[in-house]
Each structure stands twice: as structure tokens, then as C-alpha cells.
Image (cartoon, rainbow, N blue to C red):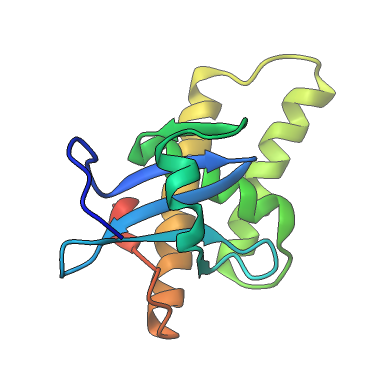
Length: 144
């Protein structure tokens, strides 16, 4: 990949509802990481670089780091199942949302803050586990 003036890395996107991040390499290049719908880990998909950076096509949206973390965790909670602390926290978020839906009301400011905090925590926990497993796209520091 080539260097592009004005491109600030890392950068974060939603690409057709799938979280994608572009991270710098030590040599000055960039690597594109897309979340896996099967594992919640990161899959290198450098072929998406031009399409994302030049916003070629339709559903490509830029996200800041905080919103990216929220999108990643909403994605993981929706598509993944499992056991353990992360999945228990996903269930907690689902219960908060379900309670508001049942009561036919919007989430309160406090509930929204709680959900955002839980998702930041689960992001770090999930990314640390990916890092321990040797996943090169893992980056728990984004959520800290």
C-alpha cells in the first residue's frame, strides 16, 4: 500500500454494517482489518483499502474510535454466542435494551451510559483475548 497525504491512521469505518479498521504498519504502510462474523476476530482484507478510503460504492461510514468500539461490540453481541464474562455482559446489555423495548420507551441517559461503559469493557476483554491468541489485528488499547 502507498502512503496517502491526509489519511490519518488508525482510522475506523463501517463497511456495509461491518466494522473495519485501517492500522499503520511499522514500514509506513497500512493494513485493513475487517471483523469476522464467525469469530469476532480480525481478518486482513487489504483489497478493501481503495474502496473504503476513497468511499467508492455505497455503505461506507467513518467512525471515531469511541463509536467504533461501540459498533464492534454491538456486532459481536449480535452475531456471536458463547460462555464466559464477555457473553454475560452482552446478555446484560441485551436485558437493558429489552426492558426499555418492553416498556415502549427510549433508553435513559443512565442506561445509555451504562451500555457504553459495558461495551468499552467487553471490547478490551475480547481484544486482550485475541491478542493472547496471537491475533495480529487485535488492539485492546482502542477501548481503554
